[in-house]
Each structure stands twice: as structure tokens, then as C-alpha cells.
Image (cartoon, rainbow, N blue to C red):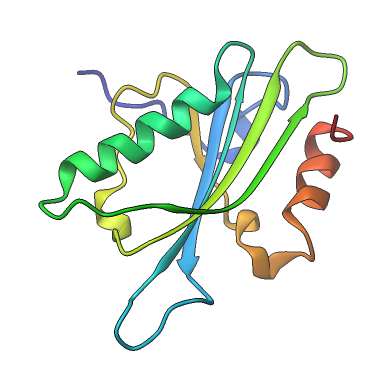
Length: 135
């Protein structure tokens, strides 16, 4: 299998297919549940949700334990002046970031530290600033 095309932010054009992601300790974590909060944004004109679903399936497949992913937030929108759509999904899981696998994800990939909720008030505001108003 070919390696995923992981690139620096300045090499990804706003109007090309790509996937952004980040993780942080979940605000819902406790001493007995070490939850991680995952942020994924898929930009695609065909099946933006499919890339995120492949990532989650890969993560579950790499772990001996079948971790669940609880959806926290979902935002769907379109890029201005483009056929591309974006899907943002936020999940809490006990699955550690060591299991993140981009196998089968053909789009360019960017670890985007601005996706973590602490960088701005709403993820929606950040996405609209980059991609345009939400539909």
C-alpha cells in the first residue's frame, strides 16, 4: 500500500481534496476513563464522510480492543465557488492516537492544531473562515 500524502499546510490548496485532523485530551475524561477527543475535517466532492469513516475503521482494526467513538459534533458545509464539500466530525474515544492510520485515505492529509476546541470559540467559525459560510 502506498504511503499517504502527508504535507505541510502551506502546500494544501483550499480548493483541493484533503483531510485535516487533530486530537486533544477530552474535557470529558476522568481518572478511570482516559478519553481522547479527535477532530476530523474531510474536504471532498464525492464522499467527504467516507474518509472519516475509513479512518475510524482503521483505528478500530489496529487495536486489539474494539474502541467505540462517541460523536460529539458534526458540521457539514460547502466551499465557496467550488463543488467541494466539507464534513467536520468530533469524537471522544479511549483509542489512543498511536492507532491513527491513514491507509485507504487517498486525499492529502494535514495535522491541523487549530482544530482543537481550545484555539477558538467554535469549530464552525474556524471552518467558515477557511471554507466559506455553512450551508
